[in-house]
Image (cartoon, rainbow, N blue to C red):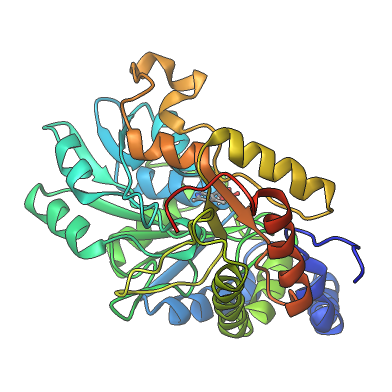
Length: 384
Ligand SMILES: *Cc1c(COP(=O)(O)O)cnc(C)c1O
């Protein structure tokens, strides 16, 4: 058996078969001289909206900007509170903070890692304006409960679907279930660009107008500014590459799902289920497996396992090691260790393993073999 290692992610593997097609489309953009907007961006927006079963899609410069623009379009600002998970990527909360609003951190469900509706409910105050459920690791939140809570309190809902293109909740696609959906084309996402990019989805004509306005300096008509917006665009050159890749996303998601099922079987085969908690799928959800995230007994075990994996050439990552409510930049919000126990436990115990499309069976065996080598004989999390 060779031990050449396994990368956490190999984007070259999925891009390589599309190389000529992408280069050809990019050459067309180069030759056209039309780098901003134009048909390239329009066509991609139409295709993306169709994929998400929404009326509109509005390209922008990144997933972080998509969140910022969503909040701006809904006129969220100073004095407003927005409920977000703490167990997520920083951008979910920083977008709220940057507009002068207050991110209010809710705890997660320990099984799905997604927002716990009961915790969300406990966070609602008179100042609450919106909830941002994050479909973490490629699995949708309990949208029925969250949308019901929002409707009862007249709140906006913004889906952070950065990790969840093509994921479904009760057959409905991520990004189609709320006022606005936000997506990222950062290269590690299931639809990764050749650089940064993002998009917002919505079914609401008025919100679409506002998103476009805010992404274009609040300018309409030219040199007339009714709002103070930003400059946030999806480049034509990204749009054509993404348009080509979009046609493969469903296949890639299916491959990710197969890889997840194979890990499940391997962990059972290696008798590791008393040391490793495998990620669970909510029966209401179609999971697209942006990450395959296991849990082990505690932080020491996790850090030890990660070091051992690194030594064997296996790429892993901790998404996310420090919950947002305990980040130094949010210290003035006054959260203490212990305020979100499920979030804090997850941050200590999680480790994400390679799951990208194109990962081979042999590589997955190598990954699980390495977990077994490292913690197979100790660090039980529960009785077998
Ligand atoms: C990646 C990500 C973002 C930000 O996207 P960028 O394109 O990197 O700005 C926001 N939220 C979540 C949950 C993400 O995973």
